[in-house]
Every structure is written in structure tokens, then in C-alpha cells.
Length: 172
Image (cartoon, rainbow, N blue to C red; front, side, top):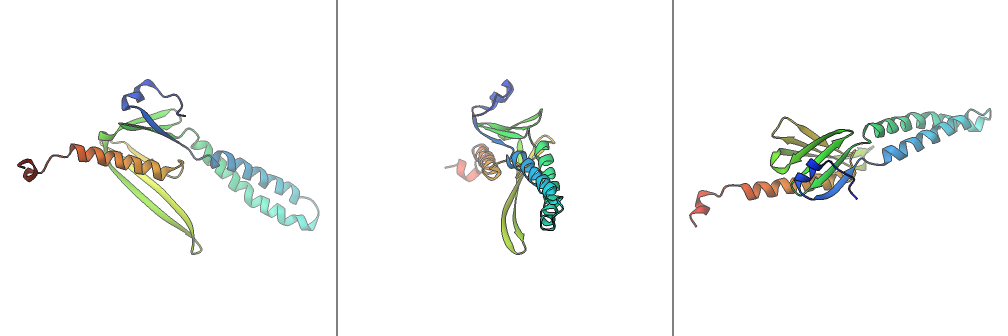
């Protein structure tokens, strides 16, 4: 279900889909930080066998805090796809982009490896509008590949329908 949007966004047609910030940053970060803190507390016991848990907790705690802070900065991020454009919303700032206002889209797919072991792909879509605005959609959004592909398809479809006919095609 798409949350309430300002009335001017409905000039873009009917809403099709909504893409929000990834939830792991808002849920997994605090859980990881809490587990790290718990392990530090357990590791502070005098017993020698528990020291390793404390060291593990010291490692996990900053990672959990970092993920939590990253999640808090991206909490209000969402993109709503419409039939004639999309809305990019960060906290209280909102950009309304029509398909005909998109100058180009640059897609970057990065294959990640950790010690020669494949660890997945990350996606980034840079959308340059005909105004000086530049929007970057990356893996901080859920299902960003699906979103970026839908935007590319819609812009390409608009360009095909608005392209002038070649002179040899007009004479037929």
C-alpha cells in the first residue's frame, strides 16, 4: 500500500509501485549493536574462556552502531513510480520527475568478490534530468534493480514514441 502523497504528485498519473529504504539498516543494526554490547558485558567476566566473547562483542558493537546510523540517515527515503514519472522523496524533500524531463540514465552494476568468492552485485542508477538535478538510486533502496529497469523502460518507450520518422519512412 502506498502512503499518502501530496496532491501535486498525482499529476503524474496513477501510482504503480513504491520502493522504500532497505529495512535491515533500521532493524539489523540495533540488533547487531545489542548483541555486541551483550557479548562485551559477558566477556568482562573474570573467566578466561569468556574473554573471546568480549573481543567479538568489541568488534560487533561498532559495526552495529554504524549500520544503525546509516539506517537513520536513509529512513525517510522512498521512490514512488507513476504512469508518467516518479517521485523521489528524502525526509521532507521531494523531487517530482516526469519521464520527458529525464536527460539520461547511467546504470552501474558492480560484481563484488571477497577473497575471490563471489559476494553478490550492487546496482546504482544515476538519473540526470534536463534541469540540473541529478538523482542517484542505489542499494539503499529495496529492489533497486527492478526500479531502475522500470524507469529505463518508461524513458525508452517515451523516446521511441516521440522520435521523428526517418525521411525514407515518411515517403512510404
